[in-house]
Length: 362
Ligand SMILES: Cc1cc2nc3c(=O)[nH]c(=O)nc-3n(C[C@H](O)[C@H](O)[C@H](O)COP(=O)(O)O)c2cc1C
Image (cartoon, rainbow, N blue to C red; front, side, top):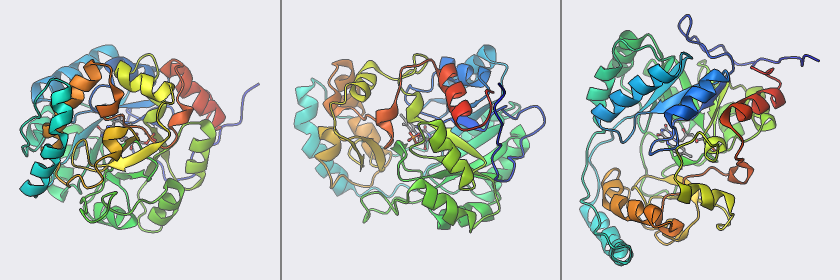
């Protein structure tokens, strides 16, 4: 029996010819390991769109990842870049956080890292995209300026997509000339994509749940919207599409698939239910991010707004803890839907979600 296919009611994402995925299902960029080449290629083969995370990588490593994906998959793909914010970290706040974490680092046999600002090599990464053919270039952590939007579009022919967490950010990104928006609800795992991290707000800004945010964003912009945050099932995706999204982006749902590069410590913590829920914290990187509420996430509610300084400060500690199999001091990014993670192969996951969302079988 063929199921009736209900495509998203939102505006069509205007992909360049030959670059549209068969399904409006995107595997979210997950920097730091989870978005392996195998995961991206498998999602692409199943008809979804895998987003290669450029964040944290050196330009050399970024180029290798681009080449590896091109070799592994003929399917359309996308790429994600971190946009740097200004170096505004308060040195006293960073020093206080370092003092609070010193004993924990020592207990793991490492020294904390040097807190430093850098721009994630954004210019070199933009240059490396020239001549490549991603379906989309998605951006997070800031509003792209119109010059960058034009540069990316001219160099790649891709859709340029900004990540937004409030209706005001959606209006700002629309004015900057992007082609579409990733609308990141408060349920989302990983870093909040807010344009500015408000130090006075524990979550860095307003935390608006996805469906509400989609409706309010729809009122601000005519651009196609990609829904992200807490989407774990076909029913979740259908609700987001019915609220006006043109596609759905899922991160946490893929974390425990066999193809993902998620660390064993992170996987185990998601599957063994040792932590009761998730929380948004700056303790690991200096930028609000949602992860499992382990001791390091919950013990430092006053951690400073200082990205990427705190990222570099805590990196050796997090790496040592992960290696030692101690989940208590590792950033265990996860969205609010984390209890719905499965260990099924990523292709099966894409097909199940597509079917249950009424999108056909890809
Ligand atoms: C482990 C992990 C890493 C992430 N890394 C990135 C990233 O590199 N760039 C980005 O734009 N978003 C990143 N995100 C956020 C996702 O793009 C997306 O907003 C989120 O996964 C959606 O919520 P969900 O995890 O509940 O599906 C990450 C999320 C997770 C869980």
